[in-house]
Image (cartoon, rainbow, N blue to C red; front, side):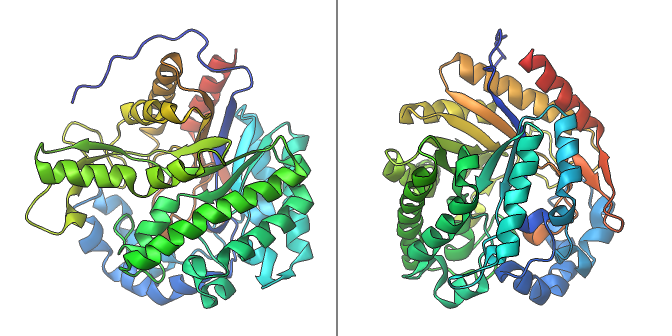
Length: 434
Protein backbone atom coordinates (compact mmCIF):
# COMPACT_ATOMS: atom_id res chain seq x y z
CA UNK A 1 0.00 0.00 0.00
CA UNK A 2 1.50 3.39 -0.97
CA UNK A 3 2.04 5.76 1.92
CA UNK A 4 -0.23 8.80 1.92
CA UNK A 5 1.38 12.07 0.92
CA UNK A 6 2.09 14.23 3.95
CA UNK A 7 0.17 17.48 4.06
CA UNK A 8 2.21 20.50 5.22
CA UNK A 9 0.66 21.85 8.41
CA UNK A 10 1.33 25.28 9.85
CA UNK A 11 1.70 25.27 13.62
CA UNK A 12 0.02 21.86 14.09
CA UNK A 13 0.98 21.47 17.75
CA UNK A 14 -0.51 23.59 20.51
CA UNK A 15 1.73 25.70 22.74
CA UNK A 16 0.93 23.46 25.72
CA UNK A 17 1.58 20.24 23.78
CA UNK A 18 3.28 17.58 25.90
CA UNK A 19 6.70 16.72 24.47
CA UNK A 20 8.10 13.82 26.42
CA UNK A 21 9.60 10.39 26.83
CA UNK A 22 8.42 7.38 28.79
CA UNK A 23 9.68 4.52 30.94
CA UNK A 24 8.22 1.87 33.23
CA UNK A 25 9.45 0.98 36.70
CA UNK A 26 10.33 -2.67 36.19
CA UNK A 27 12.16 -1.92 32.97
CA UNK A 28 14.48 0.81 34.28
CA UNK A 29 14.48 1.13 38.08
CA UNK A 30 16.35 -2.04 39.02
CA UNK A 31 16.21 -4.47 41.93
CA UNK A 32 12.52 -5.30 41.84
CA UNK A 33 10.80 -8.08 43.72
CA UNK A 34 7.61 -8.92 41.87
CA UNK A 35 6.14 -11.66 39.69
CA UNK A 36 8.47 -10.73 36.84
CA UNK A 37 11.71 -10.77 38.83
CA UNK A 38 10.87 -14.20 40.24
CA UNK A 39 9.88 -15.57 36.83
CA UNK A 40 12.96 -14.23 35.04
CA UNK A 41 15.31 -16.36 37.08
CA UNK A 42 13.36 -19.51 36.16
CA UNK A 43 13.41 -18.96 32.37
CA UNK A 44 16.67 -17.09 31.63
CA UNK A 45 18.60 -20.22 30.60
CA UNK A 46 15.76 -21.43 28.40
CA UNK A 47 15.33 -18.08 26.66
CA UNK A 48 19.07 -17.89 26.01
CA UNK A 49 19.22 -21.41 24.60
CA UNK A 50 16.34 -20.94 22.18
CA UNK A 51 17.26 -17.38 21.18
CA UNK A 52 18.77 -18.45 17.88
CA UNK A 53 15.77 -20.47 16.71
CA UNK A 54 13.41 -17.76 17.97
CA UNK A 55 15.14 -14.76 16.41
CA UNK A 56 17.37 -15.73 13.50
CA UNK A 57 14.55 -15.54 10.94
CA UNK A 58 12.98 -12.46 12.53
CA UNK A 59 15.67 -9.91 13.33
CA UNK A 60 17.50 -8.23 10.43
CA UNK A 61 21.00 -8.72 11.91
CA UNK A 62 21.23 -11.82 14.10
CA UNK A 63 25.02 -11.70 14.38
CA UNK A 64 24.89 -8.20 15.85
CA UNK A 65 22.74 -9.34 18.78
CA UNK A 66 23.78 -12.99 19.09
CA UNK A 67 26.21 -12.63 21.98
CA UNK A 68 23.76 -10.73 24.12
CA UNK A 69 20.66 -12.71 23.12
CA UNK A 70 22.37 -16.03 23.95
CA UNK A 71 23.58 -14.84 27.35
CA UNK A 72 21.23 -15.83 30.22
CA UNK A 73 22.19 -12.63 32.07
CA UNK A 74 20.41 -10.69 29.29
CA UNK A 75 17.08 -11.99 30.57
CA UNK A 76 17.51 -10.95 34.21
CA UNK A 77 16.34 -7.38 34.89
CA UNK A 78 18.69 -7.01 37.88
CA UNK A 79 19.81 -3.42 38.32
CA UNK A 80 18.32 -2.48 34.92
CA UNK A 81 19.24 1.18 34.21
CA UNK A 82 19.45 2.01 37.94
CA UNK A 83 16.90 4.75 37.35
CA UNK A 84 15.70 4.40 40.94
CA UNK A 85 18.98 5.89 42.16
CA UNK A 86 19.92 8.05 39.17
CA UNK A 87 16.62 9.66 38.27
CA UNK A 88 17.88 13.21 38.84
CA UNK A 89 20.65 12.67 36.30
CA UNK A 90 18.09 11.25 33.88
CA UNK A 91 15.75 14.21 34.40
CA UNK A 92 18.59 16.60 33.60
CA UNK A 93 19.08 14.77 30.31
CA UNK A 94 15.35 14.93 29.63
CA UNK A 95 15.29 18.67 30.25
CA UNK A 96 18.35 19.19 28.05
CA UNK A 97 16.32 17.81 25.14
CA UNK A 98 13.59 20.39 25.63
CA UNK A 99 11.07 17.83 26.86
CA UNK A 100 8.33 19.25 29.08
CA UNK A 101 6.78 15.92 30.15
CA UNK A 102 7.78 12.50 31.46
CA UNK A 103 5.68 9.36 31.75
CA UNK A 104 6.80 6.84 34.36
CA UNK A 105 5.20 4.09 36.41
CA UNK A 106 5.04 3.49 40.12
CA UNK A 107 6.00 -0.04 41.09
CA UNK A 108 3.11 -1.50 43.08
CA UNK A 109 5.28 -4.17 44.73
CA UNK A 110 7.69 -1.52 46.10
CA UNK A 111 4.94 0.54 47.63
CA UNK A 112 2.70 -2.21 49.00
CA UNK A 113 5.07 -4.96 50.06
CA UNK A 114 2.26 -6.95 51.66
CA UNK A 115 -1.51 -6.43 51.56
CA UNK A 116 -2.26 -3.11 53.27
CA UNK A 117 1.39 -2.67 54.33
CA UNK A 118 2.89 0.40 52.67
CA UNK A 119 6.58 1.20 52.41
CA UNK A 120 7.02 4.80 53.56
CA UNK A 121 10.48 5.04 52.00
CA UNK A 122 9.09 4.05 48.59
CA UNK A 123 6.23 6.52 48.88
CA UNK A 124 8.71 9.26 49.78
CA UNK A 125 10.92 8.25 46.85
CA UNK A 126 8.14 8.69 44.31
CA UNK A 127 7.12 11.99 45.87
CA UNK A 128 10.73 13.15 45.52
CA UNK A 129 10.72 12.09 41.86
CA UNK A 130 7.63 14.19 41.20
CA UNK A 131 9.16 17.18 42.96
CA UNK A 132 12.39 16.77 40.97
CA UNK A 133 10.41 16.81 37.72
CA UNK A 134 8.36 19.84 38.65
CA UNK A 135 11.49 21.67 39.77
CA UNK A 136 12.77 21.26 36.21
CA UNK A 137 9.48 22.38 34.66
CA UNK A 138 8.64 18.86 33.50
CA UNK A 139 5.03 17.65 33.74
CA UNK A 140 4.75 14.16 35.28
CA UNK A 141 2.41 11.53 33.86
CA UNK A 142 2.02 8.63 36.28
CA UNK A 143 1.13 5.06 35.30
CA UNK A 144 -0.14 2.93 38.16
CA UNK A 145 0.13 -0.52 36.55
CA UNK A 146 2.68 -1.38 33.86
CA UNK A 147 2.51 -5.20 33.58
CA UNK A 148 4.35 -6.20 36.78
CA UNK A 149 2.35 -7.47 39.78
CA UNK A 150 3.12 -7.93 43.47
CA UNK A 151 3.64 -11.56 44.36
CA UNK A 152 1.01 -11.34 47.08
CA UNK A 153 -1.54 -10.24 44.46
CA UNK A 154 -0.74 -13.31 42.37
CA UNK A 155 -1.32 -15.45 45.47
CA UNK A 156 -4.80 -13.89 45.78
CA UNK A 157 -5.76 -14.70 42.20
CA UNK A 158 -4.06 -11.86 40.33
CA UNK A 159 -6.06 -9.67 37.97
CA UNK A 160 -8.74 -12.30 37.47
CA UNK A 161 -9.21 -12.73 41.23
CA UNK A 162 -12.08 -11.32 43.30
CA UNK A 163 -9.95 -8.89 45.35
CA UNK A 164 -8.02 -7.03 42.66
CA UNK A 165 -10.36 -4.05 42.18
CA UNK A 166 -10.40 -3.31 45.89
CA UNK A 167 -6.64 -3.87 46.20
CA UNK A 168 -5.74 -1.70 43.20
CA UNK A 169 -8.05 1.07 44.41
CA UNK A 170 -6.41 1.02 47.85
CA UNK A 171 -2.97 1.22 46.23
CA UNK A 172 -4.09 4.14 44.08
CA UNK A 173 -5.48 5.91 47.14
CA UNK A 174 -2.13 5.57 48.93
CA UNK A 175 -0.34 7.08 45.92
CA UNK A 176 -2.92 9.80 45.48
CA UNK A 177 -2.54 10.89 49.11
CA UNK A 178 1.18 11.37 48.50
CA UNK A 179 1.24 13.05 45.09
CA UNK A 180 -2.34 13.41 43.86
CA UNK A 181 -2.43 17.20 43.97
CA UNK A 182 0.82 17.41 41.97
CA UNK A 183 -0.16 15.08 39.11
CA UNK A 184 -2.39 16.28 36.28
CA UNK A 185 -2.06 13.21 34.03
CA UNK A 186 -2.57 9.59 35.04
CA UNK A 187 -2.67 6.25 33.22
CA UNK A 188 -4.42 3.73 35.43
CA UNK A 189 -3.28 0.70 33.41
CA UNK A 190 -0.82 0.16 30.58
CA UNK A 191 -1.89 -1.92 27.58
CA UNK A 192 -4.65 -4.10 29.02
CA UNK A 193 -4.88 -5.75 25.59
CA UNK A 194 -1.28 -6.95 25.78
CA UNK A 195 -1.83 -8.20 29.31
CA UNK A 196 -4.96 -10.10 28.20
CA UNK A 197 -3.13 -11.68 25.26
CA UNK A 198 -0.08 -12.72 27.21
CA UNK A 199 -1.67 -13.93 30.42
CA UNK A 200 -4.97 -15.41 29.30
CA UNK A 201 -4.94 -16.08 25.54
CA UNK A 202 -1.73 -18.03 25.15
CA UNK A 203 0.76 -15.30 24.36
CA UNK A 204 2.36 -14.39 21.05
CA UNK A 205 3.61 -10.80 21.16
CA UNK A 206 6.63 -11.75 23.28
CA UNK A 207 8.41 -15.11 23.48
CA UNK A 208 7.15 -15.74 27.01
CA UNK A 209 5.22 -14.25 29.92
CA UNK A 210 4.73 -15.25 33.57
CA UNK A 211 1.96 -17.79 34.16
CA UNK A 212 0.57 -17.67 30.63
CA UNK A 213 -2.55 -19.78 30.09
CA UNK A 214 -5.11 -20.26 27.34
CA UNK A 215 -8.26 -19.53 29.32
CA UNK A 216 -10.79 -17.13 27.75
CA UNK A 217 -13.00 -17.40 30.84
CA UNK A 218 -10.26 -15.99 33.07
CA UNK A 219 -9.53 -13.44 30.37
CA UNK A 220 -13.10 -12.22 30.51
CA UNK A 221 -12.84 -11.89 34.30
CA UNK A 222 -9.69 -9.85 33.78
CA UNK A 223 -11.45 -7.52 31.35
CA UNK A 224 -14.31 -6.95 33.78
CA UNK A 225 -11.89 -6.30 36.62
CA UNK A 226 -9.64 -3.92 34.70
CA UNK A 227 -12.65 -1.85 33.58
CA UNK A 228 -14.02 -1.70 37.12
CA UNK A 229 -10.58 -0.92 38.53
CA UNK A 230 -10.08 1.97 36.10
CA UNK A 231 -13.43 3.51 37.00
CA UNK A 232 -12.83 3.09 40.72
CA UNK A 233 -9.29 4.50 40.62
CA UNK A 234 -10.37 7.47 38.52
CA UNK A 235 -12.80 8.47 41.27
CA UNK A 236 -10.03 8.23 43.88
CA UNK A 237 -7.71 10.41 41.80
CA UNK A 238 -10.42 12.98 41.17
CA UNK A 239 -10.99 13.29 44.93
CA UNK A 240 -7.41 14.54 45.31
CA UNK A 241 -7.33 16.58 42.10
CA UNK A 242 -10.67 17.19 40.33
CA UNK A 243 -8.85 18.64 37.31
CA UNK A 244 -6.68 15.56 36.78
CA UNK A 245 -6.82 13.86 33.39
CA UNK A 246 -7.15 10.09 33.87
CA UNK A 247 -6.93 7.56 31.05
CA UNK A 248 -5.63 4.14 29.99
CA UNK A 249 -2.61 3.62 27.73
CA UNK A 250 -3.85 1.31 24.99
CA UNK A 251 -1.51 -0.75 22.80
CA UNK A 252 -3.00 -0.12 19.36
CA UNK A 253 -1.90 -1.70 16.10
CA UNK A 254 -2.93 -0.60 12.64
CA UNK A 255 -4.64 -3.80 11.47
CA UNK A 256 -4.75 -4.19 7.70
CA UNK A 257 -5.82 -7.03 5.44
CA UNK A 258 -2.93 -8.93 3.88
CA UNK A 259 -5.40 -11.11 2.01
CA UNK A 260 -8.97 -10.20 1.06
CA UNK A 261 -10.91 -13.29 2.09
CA UNK A 262 -13.75 -13.84 4.61
CA UNK A 263 -11.60 -15.51 7.28
CA UNK A 264 -8.99 -12.72 7.21
CA UNK A 265 -11.73 -10.09 7.38
CA UNK A 266 -13.44 -11.77 10.37
CA UNK A 267 -10.14 -12.19 12.21
CA UNK A 268 -9.26 -8.53 11.59
CA UNK A 269 -12.61 -7.45 13.02
CA UNK A 270 -11.99 -9.54 16.13
CA UNK A 271 -8.53 -8.05 16.64
CA UNK A 272 -9.90 -4.55 16.10
CA UNK A 273 -12.53 -5.13 18.79
CA UNK A 274 -10.91 -7.28 21.45
CA UNK A 275 -9.95 -5.94 23.83
CA UNK A 276 -9.15 -2.25 23.29
CA UNK A 277 -12.36 -1.26 21.52
CA UNK A 278 -14.27 -3.43 23.99
CA UNK A 279 -12.70 -1.51 26.88
CA UNK A 280 -13.01 1.91 25.26
CA UNK A 281 -16.70 1.41 24.62
CA UNK A 282 -17.21 0.68 28.32
CA UNK A 283 -15.13 3.50 29.77
CA UNK A 284 -15.77 6.28 27.26
CA UNK A 285 -17.84 8.18 29.85
CA UNK A 286 -15.34 7.41 32.62
CA UNK A 287 -12.08 8.52 31.08
CA UNK A 288 -10.55 11.91 30.29
CA UNK A 289 -8.24 10.92 27.45
CA UNK A 290 -7.19 7.93 25.38
CA UNK A 291 -3.54 6.93 25.58
CA UNK A 292 -2.13 5.53 22.33
CA UNK A 293 0.87 3.18 22.31
CA UNK A 294 1.73 2.65 18.64
CA UNK A 295 4.63 0.68 17.16
CA UNK A 296 3.56 -1.07 13.95
CA UNK A 297 0.88 -2.13 11.53
CA UNK A 298 -0.15 -5.78 11.47
CA UNK A 299 -1.18 -7.54 8.27
CA UNK A 300 -3.90 -10.18 8.62
CA UNK A 301 -3.59 -13.15 6.29
CA UNK A 302 -5.49 -16.39 6.94
CA UNK A 303 -3.71 -19.64 6.13
CA UNK A 304 -3.85 -23.36 6.88
CA UNK A 305 -2.50 -23.00 10.41
CA UNK A 306 -3.46 -21.79 13.86
CA UNK A 307 -4.85 -18.20 13.83
CA UNK A 308 -1.91 -17.07 15.97
CA UNK A 309 0.18 -17.35 12.77
CA UNK A 310 -2.21 -15.27 10.67
CA UNK A 311 -0.48 -11.99 11.53
CA UNK A 312 2.52 -10.48 9.74
CA UNK A 313 4.55 -7.81 11.55
CA UNK A 314 6.29 -6.47 8.46
CA UNK A 315 4.98 -5.76 4.98
CA UNK A 316 7.44 -6.40 2.16
CA UNK A 317 7.96 -2.69 1.42
CA UNK A 318 8.36 -1.58 5.05
CA UNK A 319 11.84 -1.05 6.53
CA UNK A 320 12.47 -3.13 9.65
CA UNK A 321 13.65 -2.21 13.12
CA UNK A 322 16.08 -4.35 15.14
CA UNK A 323 13.27 -6.66 16.30
CA UNK A 324 12.01 -7.23 12.76
CA UNK A 325 8.88 -5.12 13.15
CA UNK A 326 7.92 -3.10 10.09
CA UNK A 327 8.16 0.68 10.31
CA UNK A 328 4.89 2.28 9.17
CA UNK A 329 4.35 5.86 10.39
CA UNK A 330 1.04 6.23 8.52
CA UNK A 331 -0.45 3.75 10.97
CA UNK A 332 -0.33 6.41 13.68
CA UNK A 333 -2.45 8.66 11.47
CA UNK A 334 -4.91 5.83 10.79
CA UNK A 335 -5.33 4.96 14.46
CA UNK A 336 -5.75 8.53 15.72
CA UNK A 337 -8.29 9.21 12.99
CA UNK A 338 -10.32 6.14 14.00
CA UNK A 339 -10.34 7.33 17.62
CA UNK A 340 -11.95 10.69 16.74
CA UNK A 341 -15.35 8.99 17.12
CA UNK A 342 -14.89 8.85 20.89
CA UNK A 343 -14.71 12.66 21.09
CA UNK A 344 -11.89 12.49 23.64
CA UNK A 345 -8.40 14.00 23.75
CA UNK A 346 -5.63 11.68 22.56
CA UNK A 347 -2.10 11.40 23.93
CA UNK A 348 0.55 9.25 22.26
CA UNK A 349 1.83 7.60 25.42
CA UNK A 350 4.37 5.37 23.62
CA UNK A 351 5.99 5.37 20.19
CA UNK A 352 9.53 4.15 19.66
CA UNK A 353 12.02 1.93 17.90
CA UNK A 354 14.77 -0.54 18.87
CA UNK A 355 17.76 0.73 16.90
CA UNK A 356 21.16 -0.18 18.33
CA UNK A 357 23.14 1.58 15.60
CA UNK A 358 20.93 4.69 15.85
CA UNK A 359 20.54 4.83 12.07
CA UNK A 360 16.74 4.90 11.95
CA UNK A 361 15.50 6.57 15.13
CA UNK A 362 15.75 10.22 14.10
CA UNK A 363 13.79 9.66 10.88
CA UNK A 364 11.36 7.41 12.74
CA UNK A 365 10.46 10.19 15.19
CA UNK A 366 10.30 12.81 12.45
CA UNK A 367 7.97 10.70 10.27
CA UNK A 368 5.62 9.80 13.11
CA UNK A 369 5.38 13.42 14.22
CA UNK A 370 4.56 14.38 10.62
CA UNK A 371 1.70 11.89 10.69
CA UNK A 372 0.50 13.33 14.00
CA UNK A 373 0.53 16.80 12.47
CA UNK A 374 -1.52 15.50 9.55
CA UNK A 375 -3.99 13.86 11.91
CA UNK A 376 -4.36 17.06 13.94
CA UNK A 377 -5.10 18.98 10.73
CA UNK A 378 -7.77 16.38 9.94
CA UNK A 379 -9.56 16.82 13.26
CA UNK A 380 -7.83 14.67 15.88
CA UNK A 381 -7.45 16.31 19.30
CA UNK A 382 -3.91 15.16 20.09
CA UNK A 383 -2.40 16.66 23.25
CA UNK A 384 1.01 15.00 23.59
CA UNK A 385 3.73 12.67 22.33
CA UNK A 386 5.94 10.48 24.53
CA UNK A 387 8.83 8.69 22.84
CA UNK A 388 9.55 5.16 24.12
CA UNK A 389 11.94 5.05 25.78
CA UNK A 390 14.02 7.69 27.51
CA UNK A 391 16.56 5.01 28.48
CA UNK A 392 17.74 1.69 27.13
CA UNK A 393 15.71 -0.72 29.21
CA UNK A 394 14.81 -4.28 30.05
CA UNK A 395 12.43 -5.18 27.22
CA UNK A 396 10.52 -7.86 29.12
CA UNK A 397 11.27 -11.39 27.93
CA UNK A 398 13.56 -10.12 25.15
CA UNK A 399 15.85 -8.79 27.86
CA UNK A 400 18.32 -5.99 27.23
CA UNK A 401 19.38 -6.57 23.63
CA UNK A 402 16.67 -4.32 22.04
CA UNK A 403 17.88 -0.71 22.41
CA UNK A 404 14.92 1.70 22.46
CA UNK A 405 16.57 4.54 24.37
CA UNK A 406 17.18 8.13 23.45
CA UNK A 407 19.88 7.60 26.06
CA UNK A 408 22.21 4.61 25.81
CA UNK A 409 23.13 2.86 29.05
CA UNK A 410 26.44 1.12 29.65
CA UNK A 411 25.33 -2.14 31.27
CA UNK A 412 28.39 -2.33 33.56
CA UNK A 413 29.01 1.28 34.59
CA UNK A 414 25.45 2.61 34.07
CA UNK A 415 26.98 5.64 32.36
CA UNK A 416 24.50 7.59 30.25
CA UNK A 417 25.13 8.88 26.73
CA UNK A 418 22.71 10.89 24.61
CA UNK A 419 22.31 9.36 21.19
CA UNK A 420 22.43 11.53 18.07
CA UNK A 421 18.75 10.75 17.50
CA UNK A 422 17.98 12.32 20.89
CA UNK A 423 19.45 15.56 19.63
CA UNK A 424 17.34 15.23 16.47
CA UNK A 425 14.25 14.82 18.67
CA UNK A 426 15.32 17.94 20.58
CA UNK A 427 15.53 19.84 17.28
CA UNK A 428 12.04 18.71 16.33
CA UNK A 429 10.64 19.81 19.68
CA UNK A 430 12.27 23.22 19.23
CA UNK A 431 10.96 23.50 15.68
CA UNK A 432 7.39 22.60 16.54
CA UNK A 433 7.36 24.64 19.76
CA UNK A 434 8.57 27.85 18.15
